[in-house]
Length: 462
View (cartoon, helix red, strand yellow):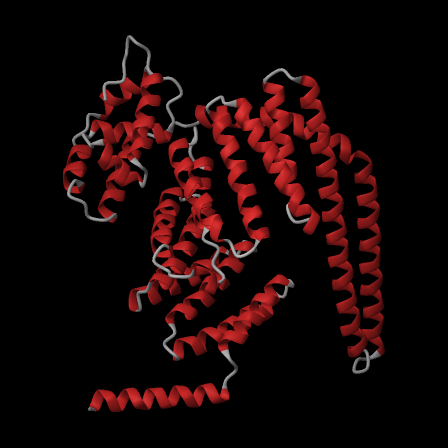
């Protein structure tokens, strides 16, 4: 009876609060509109208010959505400090009130945060947990969640942060992303998702030397981009430029110089268009900011002295001078931008290759540090049946002997050394896949590539 009485009092208090508070759902929707209009500060305030109301109502799912949207906004503007604060608050909320929605929001934000600071192992672990939680939510669209991007982001991680990319894992998550595009809210959402998916699929075919298939898929990407452009001309101008540059690179590698130059020219034109749009956007933002400041100063001049008025006109003159100088610089830059974009596009591949070679040459992290890192990761990770044995074997490894082995290898990277240490410690493929957050076929692929890096007279022993 006492518990029922307490619950009744809490329920009555919540109803009284609702009578005097704004609807939290309306606040959240207004905040989302503010984000779209670039009013981040106002949106953050409304989400804080909505979160407080949802929390007082014990609506943990919607409270976590408010924290998620605040964190994503901080990530978009590069404010990692505040993003980390939202991540910690989501973690606390999940530990106290676990649900699929709360877990999805926490792990999604954590995955984004760790990918932003290049902790890819943690980003993949949280990304997988976010997908697991997502698949338990009955209707994600009710919360403005687009499931396809959870799967695509995982594929992107495996493609971008591993050299060479782990094609098996990339294809696995791209297939899942394709499947959920069927449930997209609108045709436009579906096409935009397919553009990103097929673009990454084309890269996977390129990696394995299927140039004809990669060319066909990237041309389909361009067709889909043209379809979206009819509805929203400026939506994916960046994706069009990347697709054109990819085809120019593909034709150049095959010695098809005429097609390569044709697509390079198209890529340059697209980049110039993108530059013009960006310039126009910046000028509009400056003009808008100027108008707002001007109105504020006109209101203040009724309450200020003549001395402050003089400072106002000086500041206004400086602002106009800055705008004029900025415009002149933009005009001068435009005269040379086409040639610069063309040269930059031709040099992009060489730059990537040079950077990759330099990274490999400087990849000299000692085995002792890598071994300590693996042991620390095993100790702080989930307790598995193989954890204690793996730690003991790692501590007993003959590192000088392994270093002798590595000296005979060709272009052994830090990631390669991590796998070699795991194999040397006697861990199985399944254990390494679980530890590294990979699929077992991906580990077999890694071991095959490692064997290729050692000469026949010094074969890879694992």
